[in-house]
Amino acid sequence: MTQTSENVTWLTQEAYDQLKAELEYLSGPARIEIAKKIEAAREEGDLRENGGYHAAKEEQGKQELRVRQLTQLLEQAKVGEAPADTGVVAPGMVVTIAFDGDPDDTLTFLLASREYASSDIETYSPQSPLGSGVTGKKVGQDAEYELPNGRTASVRILEAKPYQG
Image 1 (cartoon, rainbow, N blue to C red):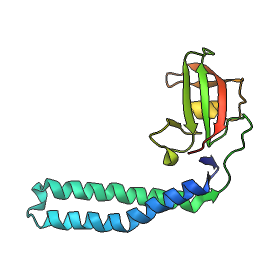
Image 2 (tube, helix red, strand yellow; image 1 turned 90 degrees about the vertical axis):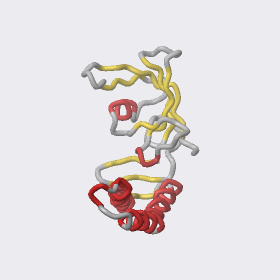
Image 3 (spheres, rainbow, N blue to C red; image 1 turned 120 degrees about the vertical axis):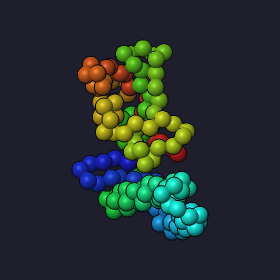
Image 4 (spheres, rainbow, N blue to C red; image 1 turned 30 degrees about the vertical axis):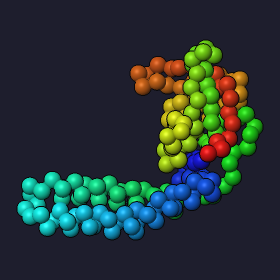
């Protein structure tokens, strides 16, 4: 779970450990693997027309960008507890909303940073229009947020529970 306040990112111990393990892998074994791919492609000959070489270099660039992102994130991270089960929407919570108060048109999502996203549940950033609109609201309250077209949408908070992983 993450919550950004100024330049501090709050993480559970589990999230911190998961991101640290990813950083260690990308900084160690993954770097060695990509270096071997680049060397193998380089040995194939003319680099200007070598698709494998260019693909490996692009992969290396993406990998190094992720290393920099993780390094910065973990340098700014503070490890904390999961949010309390108070019914108030906060980062690290699974939130269920009803659009325009229609109980049949609902969405359940994890309010967290994209670094904590999983394939199990849709994730919305606390800084997103929807995320910032629902943060701080209690179960039963209505929240408004701005759509990309400039209009305002209304949702009702149906449930807010701490994410259990």
